[in-house]
Length: 489
Image (tube, rainbow, N blue to C red; front, side):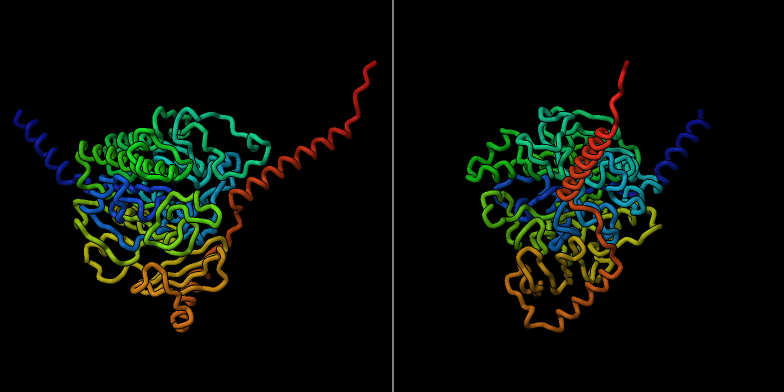
């Protein structure tokens, strides 16, 4: 008995001594969230107590950016830790499950593929938007577990789910949407999956189960489609914002509220399972909220204030997003970090903390932890860069200045002093020719090793696909005309 007791004691001590102390990692991504639409950035109407608590007890990145001002390319940059211009993916992919060429290039590693060899359990819950055919499926791109949808969007209520998605609208016009899979059933790994409640809540509850069930360090990518249109939320949550006159904004705020409640479900699961203190949580948006367009002012429901413009823009409202980190065991509490950081840094940070695979193409991001903790005194990035398709719009941002060309309605570059004018109110391009030249050189050097985008933007892809079907139909008709009828005697 003494021998068995001693053996058990040694086993317990060994387990404690060699326990895996690496942190769990959760990347929470909102979709089309306006910079000014959460409590920790100043909104006093919407209720986001869980996010606000994470922010106030963690790190707020005052100058947190994503790599592109709209959905698909931004996600490609985040998930690889490399500028998407490096591999020419600067468009929104269409949901196209039979196209084995349309997706995140297979020679680009996701952070999931870099963490799996290090023994991490990896998962993605929510929106993928990086290719819908088999080679690009999350289970084949480094994620052990997937629950969500492959397209660029999804309806929020289960009663709209069906399996029939015509390429024509009810009035007979062609359907050019990037979100053709918006009503498709969800997937759990490669099988059809159901949800029987508001989608944001269903995703959150599944994330809570993943957190509780993981028996080793995990990395979870929780990619909400909220608050992206279609604007839908539970009535009881919408009613909380009855004082908001704009009906679309009222629903949009309710969607943010519901997302925050869902994040609270995940936090509670972390606490119940004893994993909260050693879990690094990042929260950010994939780009800014929808911006006003001439003649469509009534369609705007997001608030990017005090930033200029919004989704799709090279100005601050396009890519400067709410961005926080929380890790009780590894980060200080109540810190506002001033230097520019990027969604590229999430992969680099995860790989560094996990001891993940660093082989293959180099990461463009950096491990943020030593910068935030003060172990490294410099800035994480001397410059950050942006490019839409092959440079139709572009931008370079240093800690001091920002040089950009906005393709929508602008023909001349703009230059801003980001120290004294962070909201881009005074274009100083004529006053600082030397700084303009310096920033132009930085961007040109960065762009010299990028690849040309050859993939089609979603709407153009859909047009080409419909034209292909039509051409095939005509070809078959012509062949049929040449076939001689059979005569039977």
